Structures are given as C-alpha cells and as structure tokens.
Image (cartoon, rainbow, N blue to C red; front, side, top):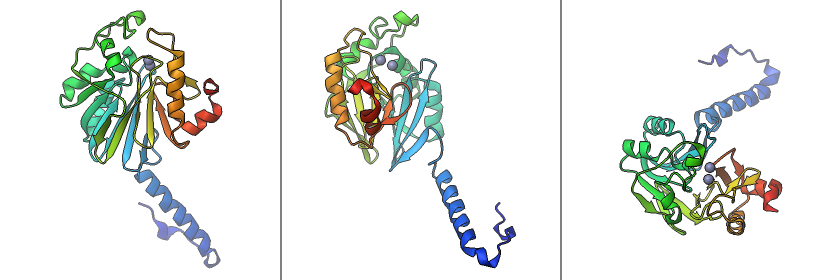
Length: 247
Ligand SMILES: [Zn+2]
Ligand SMILES: [Zn+2]
C-alpha cells in the first residue's frame, strides 16, 4: 500500500506534488488496463495476444466480448492455456495459408475446442493433409492435418463479439493466402512482414500476384497495425516508408 501521507511536501511546492501524483495515478491506470504489458495490447474493445514457436511462426488470439478467433496455430499448448485462463470462447481457427508452420497445431486445438470452426481458403485446403504441399516433408516433419475445414473467401465477414473480421484475399506467397482485417488490426500471414514480404519461390507462389496483393494492403490507413506471420508487429505507414520490397 502506498503511504502518500508520509510524503513531506513543503507548502511552496504543492503544484509539484500534484503533478507527481497525477503521473503516478496515470501510470497505475495504464498498468491496470494492460496497456503496458508486452504482447498483450488493447485496441478499442478488440484485444490481441501473440504466441510464437521454434520455427518463428506467430499465432494471434483476437478477443472481443468474451469471444475469440485464432489466427494460425503455432504453439497450440500455450494458446489453449491462454484461452482457458482468459475464459474466452474460441469461435474460429483461421488459417492464413496452408504451410505447415501455420497449421501444425490445428488438430490439438480442435480436440480441445471442438466448437471452433476451422477456416482456410479453398485454394490452400489441399495443403492440410499433404506433407509435400504444406512443405513439412522438406523440413523432416510430416504434418498431415485431418480436420473438417470451411472455406474462407474474399469479402467474407466473420462476426466476433461486437467486432467483424474481414477476409482479404492476398495470393502470391501461396495461391490461397489470406489477410484478416478488424478495421484496426491487420493479420498478414506470410504476405507482408516488417521490412520484408513473403517468399514466392514455393510451389504456387507468384511475384506478380504478391505485388497486386501488397498494393491492396497499402491502401489501408497508415496507422493500421500489421501483425505478421513471422517477426515483429509494424504499421502500414512504417512499411510504406521503410520496406524496400514495396518500392
Ligand atoms: Zn508460408
Ligand atoms: Zn510461415
């Protein structure tokens, strides 16, 4: 407990102590609201939490009004613990694309949260159960995911509490790559990274398609927070200024 009464303030310096008190109160409010916690940031009523695994793939929980959507499935045990701790109802497991580092945790999560709907773009659906197509074979881990998945397509909007998650088709890294947009947060999978863009040299990749997809994303407001499938968060404005792959 803070014993403010113990602070001796000379009469002349009252304005000074009020400023100090205001700063302390503001600091405590920020800490209590979670605004200072790394990896857990609040943007309006939609919150997000990030997780990553040994392959460096990022997954994100988006939460609004007690409902949650998961973008990709790296670190499934940690995600599962987190959903339970935060008392969130997992409504969707959205796969940004079909590469193994983004889909490998799907089965574990579906077993634990059977009401969650798995969603992937139909053009990447065949990667789920095929270790060659999802590239796991080449990395010496055979990932073959057996789940029932629903199709994600352009313009589709997924309600989550009082928010909406919109699907933007962004082929280029893979044919069925998608980007998810909440109006403030943009989950770009392996399409756009901080200072880089997705590889196009895997089967189904296309430089030309990636270029068109990136142009779509760059039309979003500069302050849009970009949460990529690998690496650190960034913003559309920062990438427009500093990402030379976009020149
Ligand atoms: Zn990928
Ligand atoms: Zn990846």
